[in-house]
Image (cartoon, rainbow, N blue to C red; front, side):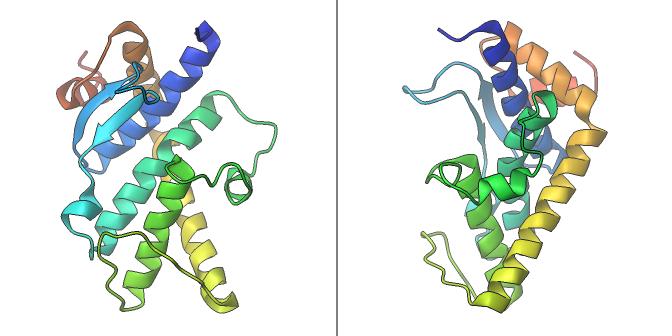
Length: 184
Protein backbone atom coordinates (compact mmCIF):
# COMPACT_ATOMS: atom_id res chain seq x y z
CA UNK A 1 0.00 0.00 0.00
CA UNK A 2 1.26 3.44 -0.88
CA UNK A 3 1.75 6.06 1.78
CA UNK A 4 -0.24 9.28 1.69
CA UNK A 5 2.93 11.25 0.84
CA UNK A 6 3.76 8.90 -2.06
CA UNK A 7 0.17 9.22 -3.34
CA UNK A 8 0.52 13.02 -3.30
CA UNK A 9 3.75 12.81 -5.28
CA UNK A 10 2.13 10.51 -7.85
CA UNK A 11 -0.94 12.77 -8.01
CA UNK A 12 1.23 15.78 -8.87
CA UNK A 13 3.08 13.72 -11.48
CA UNK A 14 -0.16 12.65 -13.19
CA UNK A 15 -1.65 16.13 -12.82
CA UNK A 16 1.39 17.54 -14.64
CA UNK A 17 0.69 15.25 -17.59
CA UNK A 18 -3.02 16.11 -17.62
CA UNK A 19 -2.70 19.88 -17.29
CA UNK A 20 0.05 20.25 -19.87
CA UNK A 21 -1.86 17.99 -22.26
CA UNK A 22 -4.94 20.18 -22.05
CA UNK A 23 -2.95 23.42 -22.28
CA UNK A 24 -1.49 22.08 -25.53
CA UNK A 25 -4.95 20.96 -26.73
CA UNK A 26 -4.03 17.28 -26.50
CA UNK A 27 -7.05 15.15 -25.66
CA UNK A 28 -7.25 13.45 -22.27
CA UNK A 29 -9.36 10.31 -22.17
CA UNK A 30 -8.86 9.63 -18.47
CA UNK A 31 -6.66 10.68 -15.57
CA UNK A 32 -6.49 8.32 -12.61
CA UNK A 33 -4.33 7.19 -9.73
CA UNK A 34 -5.86 3.71 -9.94
CA UNK A 35 -3.84 1.14 -11.85
CA UNK A 36 -5.20 0.44 -15.32
CA UNK A 37 -4.96 -3.27 -16.22
CA UNK A 38 -2.25 -3.78 -13.59
CA UNK A 39 -0.21 -0.79 -14.78
CA UNK A 40 0.81 2.26 -12.82
CA UNK A 41 -1.47 5.29 -12.42
CA UNK A 42 -1.94 7.02 -15.75
CA UNK A 43 -3.20 9.88 -17.82
CA UNK A 44 -4.48 8.47 -21.08
CA UNK A 45 -4.05 11.01 -23.86
CA UNK A 46 -4.86 11.09 -27.54
CA UNK A 47 -1.34 11.24 -28.99
CA UNK A 48 -0.96 14.14 -31.37
CA UNK A 49 2.00 12.47 -33.12
CA UNK A 50 0.18 9.18 -33.69
CA UNK A 51 -2.54 11.15 -35.48
CA UNK A 52 0.05 13.07 -37.54
CA UNK A 53 3.46 11.34 -37.20
CA UNK A 54 5.33 13.64 -39.58
CA UNK A 55 4.26 16.84 -37.82
CA UNK A 56 7.01 18.46 -35.72
CA UNK A 57 4.49 20.36 -33.57
CA UNK A 58 2.57 17.15 -32.81
CA UNK A 59 5.79 15.45 -31.72
CA UNK A 60 6.69 18.46 -29.60
CA UNK A 61 3.30 18.37 -27.86
CA UNK A 62 3.66 14.67 -27.05
CA UNK A 63 7.22 15.20 -25.80
CA UNK A 64 6.05 18.02 -23.54
CA UNK A 65 3.17 15.94 -22.16
CA UNK A 66 5.59 13.09 -21.36
CA UNK A 67 8.09 15.47 -19.75
CA UNK A 68 5.39 17.25 -17.73
CA UNK A 69 4.76 14.43 -15.26
CA UNK A 70 8.33 14.08 -14.00
CA UNK A 71 8.85 17.86 -13.99
CA UNK A 72 5.66 18.44 -11.97
CA UNK A 73 6.67 15.65 -9.60
CA UNK A 74 10.11 17.25 -9.22
CA UNK A 75 8.48 20.67 -8.62
CA UNK A 76 6.30 19.17 -5.87
CA UNK A 77 8.98 16.91 -4.37
CA UNK A 78 12.46 17.94 -5.52
CA UNK A 79 15.05 15.23 -5.98
CA UNK A 80 18.48 15.91 -4.52
CA UNK A 81 19.78 16.32 -8.08
CA UNK A 82 18.39 19.50 -9.59
CA UNK A 83 19.55 18.62 -13.12
CA UNK A 84 16.65 16.39 -14.12
CA UNK A 85 17.76 16.41 -17.78
CA UNK A 86 21.13 14.92 -16.81
CA UNK A 87 19.48 12.34 -14.57
CA UNK A 88 17.21 11.34 -17.46
CA UNK A 89 20.17 10.52 -19.63
CA UNK A 90 21.43 8.07 -17.00
CA UNK A 91 20.00 4.66 -16.33
CA UNK A 92 17.55 3.53 -14.95
CA UNK A 93 15.56 6.63 -15.95
CA UNK A 94 15.84 5.85 -19.67
CA UNK A 95 13.84 2.62 -19.49
CA UNK A 96 11.62 1.74 -22.43
CA UNK A 97 8.04 2.75 -21.68
CA UNK A 98 9.08 5.36 -19.13
CA UNK A 99 8.11 9.01 -19.47
CA UNK A 100 11.77 9.77 -20.12
CA UNK A 101 12.01 7.25 -22.95
CA UNK A 102 8.77 8.51 -24.47
CA UNK A 103 9.84 12.16 -24.31
CA UNK A 104 13.31 11.47 -25.67
CA UNK A 105 11.82 9.45 -28.55
CA UNK A 106 9.50 12.29 -29.51
CA UNK A 107 12.34 14.80 -29.33
CA UNK A 108 14.40 12.52 -31.61
CA UNK A 109 11.46 12.48 -34.04
CA UNK A 110 11.31 16.28 -33.86
CA UNK A 111 15.01 16.49 -34.67
CA UNK A 112 14.71 14.13 -37.63
CA UNK A 113 11.62 15.89 -39.00
CA UNK A 114 13.28 19.29 -38.67
CA UNK A 115 16.10 17.88 -40.77
CA UNK A 116 13.85 16.69 -43.59
CA UNK A 117 13.37 13.03 -42.67
CA UNK A 118 10.03 11.25 -42.37
CA UNK A 119 9.91 8.89 -39.45
CA UNK A 120 6.43 7.30 -39.27
CA UNK A 121 5.16 5.74 -36.07
CA UNK A 122 7.50 2.76 -35.61
CA UNK A 123 10.33 2.48 -33.11
CA UNK A 124 13.38 4.60 -33.77
CA UNK A 125 16.91 3.24 -33.92
CA UNK A 126 19.05 6.36 -34.05
CA UNK A 127 22.79 6.68 -33.93
CA UNK A 128 23.54 10.40 -33.92
CA UNK A 129 27.04 11.60 -34.70
CA UNK A 130 28.56 14.19 -32.33
CA UNK A 131 27.13 17.23 -34.14
CA UNK A 132 23.68 15.68 -34.44
CA UNK A 133 23.82 14.55 -30.82
CA UNK A 134 24.57 18.08 -29.66
CA UNK A 135 21.67 19.48 -31.72
CA UNK A 136 19.38 16.77 -30.31
CA UNK A 137 20.50 17.53 -26.74
CA UNK A 138 19.81 21.23 -27.29
CA UNK A 139 16.33 20.43 -28.64
CA UNK A 140 15.66 18.22 -25.59
CA UNK A 141 16.80 20.98 -23.23
CA UNK A 142 14.62 23.56 -25.03
CA UNK A 143 11.60 21.25 -24.87
CA UNK A 144 12.16 20.68 -21.15
CA UNK A 145 12.50 24.44 -20.56
CA UNK A 146 9.24 25.15 -22.41
CA UNK A 147 7.48 22.48 -20.39
CA UNK A 148 8.95 23.78 -17.12
CA UNK A 149 7.59 27.27 -17.96
CA UNK A 150 4.09 25.85 -18.49
CA UNK A 151 4.27 23.99 -15.19
CA UNK A 152 5.41 27.08 -13.31
CA UNK A 153 2.76 29.28 -14.94
CA UNK A 154 -0.01 26.78 -14.19
CA UNK A 155 1.18 25.33 -10.88
CA UNK A 156 -2.07 26.22 -9.11
CA UNK A 157 -4.05 24.27 -11.73
CA UNK A 158 -1.72 21.28 -11.31
CA UNK A 159 -2.28 21.40 -7.54
CA UNK A 160 -6.07 21.49 -8.09
CA UNK A 161 -5.94 18.51 -10.46
CA UNK A 162 -3.67 16.60 -8.05
CA UNK A 163 -6.13 17.23 -5.19
CA UNK A 164 -9.01 16.06 -7.37
CA UNK A 165 -7.11 12.91 -8.35
CA UNK A 166 -6.63 12.11 -4.68
CA UNK A 167 -10.36 12.56 -4.04
CA UNK A 168 -11.86 10.99 -7.19
CA UNK A 169 -11.26 7.60 -8.81
CA UNK A 170 -10.88 9.19 -12.25
CA UNK A 171 -11.07 12.54 -14.01
CA UNK A 172 -12.33 13.17 -17.51
CA UNK A 173 -11.05 15.76 -19.94
CA UNK A 174 -13.95 18.02 -18.96
CA UNK A 175 -13.00 17.64 -15.29
CA UNK A 176 -9.39 18.60 -16.03
CA UNK A 177 -10.51 21.57 -18.14
CA UNK A 178 -12.79 22.79 -15.35
CA UNK A 179 -10.00 22.48 -12.79
CA UNK A 180 -7.59 24.38 -15.03
CA UNK A 181 -10.17 27.15 -15.38
CA UNK A 182 -10.81 26.91 -11.60
CA UNK A 183 -14.49 26.06 -12.13
CA UNK A 184 -14.56 22.87 -10.12
